Image (cartoon, rainbow, N blue to C red; front, side, top):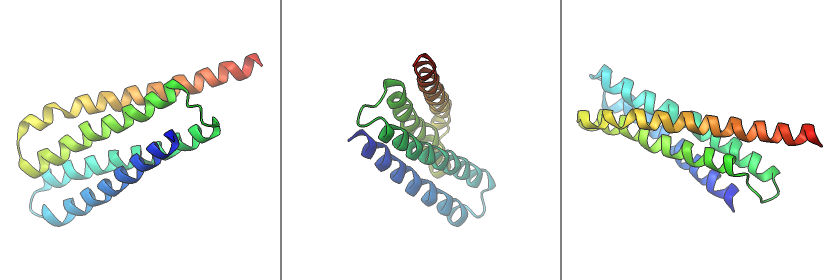
Length: 131
């Protein structure tokens, strides 16, 4: 079940990343700053869509039992995408500077997600060394 959550989240992230990249190139031809915002948001969304697919693959290897740090990484990647990429998209589309204040929170969620993934890997290494 959890595997499909991450694959669905990855599919949505990937779709939105491609759509944002296309919007950046077509809607903001005259606004270099807005293109940069949309492109950055799209890049990070795509990176983390791929990370979610990898998490789903790792979760699948766990035979249905998803380790809590691995699950935390997935949720943090998803939160980071919404907050980081989403705030950049909204900033580019509206020009409202308040959205820029949300972006660092999304970046922190991304970093915490990578830390959680690292902890999950470290725990698995520790267990495998003890066996």
